[in-house]
Amino acid sequence: MLTAIKIAIIAILIGGSCWLLFEHREWFSNPQLIKREVLGWGVWGPIVYILLYAVGPSFLVPGAVMTIAGGLAFGTWRGSIYSLIGADAGALVAFGAGRFLGRAFVERAVGHRFHSTLDKIAKHGFQIIFYLRLVPIIPYNALNLLAGASRITFKDYFWASMIGMVPGTILFAFLGDALWHPLSPRFFLALGLIALSLAAGEGWRRWSNMRV
Image 1 (cartoon, rainbow, N blue to C red):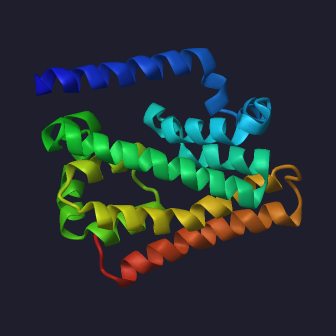
Image 2: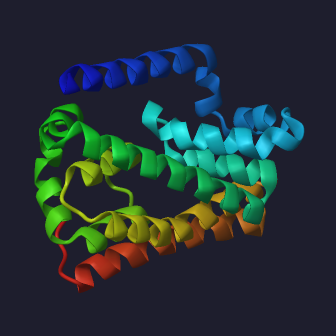
């Protein structure tokens, strides 16, 4: 019975992915189109954007694209807040899915190259998740599923995700806001700050002698 439920969940996710990508693939390849769509909903725009952000990474949509769209549509600070809400909601849902589906199922779903990551998350849960939020070298939703299937506590996952996603979210929303004037000093400042943030995360990993 439990196996049948898991298969049904995967079928729903795949079916939803195919439908969304077939009907609205352009939304997730061009931040300007996401901006136009969410603003077209008027006062409901922020809610639509948050929902799109929550489900987007499940459909292999880069979180950076969604956050840049938030900056374009709502400005740096509102875009950051809406992006964080959407990203956090999506992270919690995917974590719950990973915990429900189990380690063996998730390992088959994400591929063999991430098997060792499960053991590392279990051993250094908070530090690993925090680093991978700062320096996203593993696809967003794959990380969420892996964390759910690992032995990390929900508390460590929650706080590492909440804190670790803040710098990148603000900076990519800032970049989206700056795209209105792509040759302005603000645009190049945003790019520089993003590079600095990634470098700081990598520097912290090397300083702490943590292996990912």
